[in-house]
Length: 155
Image (cartoon, rainbow, N blue to C red; front, side, top):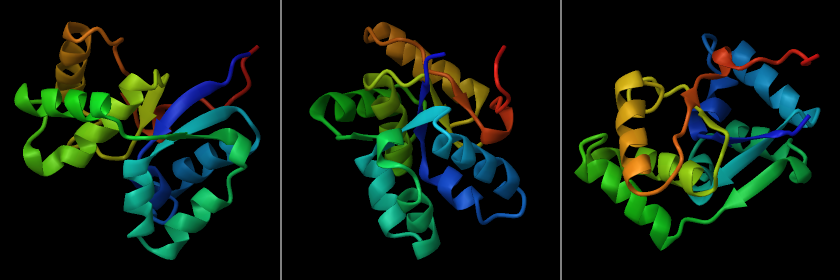
């Protein structure tokens, strides 16, 4: 079975330390360590993690390097993020969230994993992101929380 490429935003790393999200975030990273998933980590996520508590950084450091794809933010990604904002999917104050979605779209991630229900794991915003993606020639992107991901072995 092909490993899924999953874009992971900062909230999933932080979720390991939040009583509400810890079980699902920890299970997700356990699955990454067992090579079920490959994660896509952008410069945006890395910058947010660097300014977060050290324990967030330790979660990233604990993952096998072969299970991580590092994504560079390009002009293409910035342009797509700006399109999300100009189309009203997000506001200027949520530019990093727009970069998360744009990076995942440009790098052809299978899905985005996040605990950000206000800006990302939100059906109305997902529809807006996908309307922009389709208009600009990108595929649709799925955005889920770690709770919605299946960790069982497929038959």
